[in-house]
Image (cartoon, rainbow, N blue to C red; front, side, top):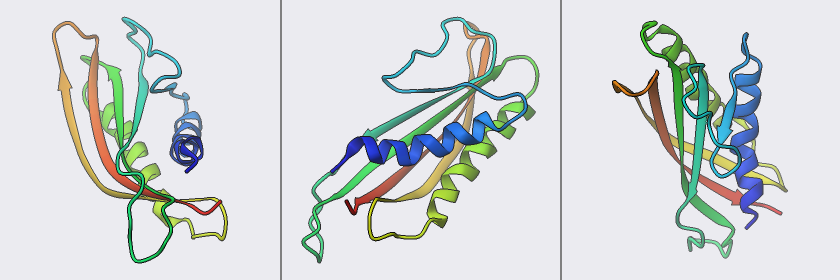
Length: 143
């Protein structure tokens, strides 16, 4: 299984969606670049974790991975929830669009499951309001 290819199947569409916004919103992926410490600007954090990786089904195809995607949206606190909700909607729309692709003879075939959330939170110490969504996924590697 090509874990980097699975990661790219999720991360690339998210990067493209938030980069196309005006103004573009920076996206930080787990284990690549740290989100800005004490930043007051908006940004997105995406975490991808892998779970079951050798699921045995009715076929002999072991190139199947289950995992989860967590998207956290950080916007400036004290400005109201509208911008955070707009960015969360972009994340949800992007994840759901992954289900629209067709299964090709080669490559990664990825399907997100039910999107949970959004949940919103803020603390006194943080300069941000955070919106969070998460979804499970199944990916197959067709070489």
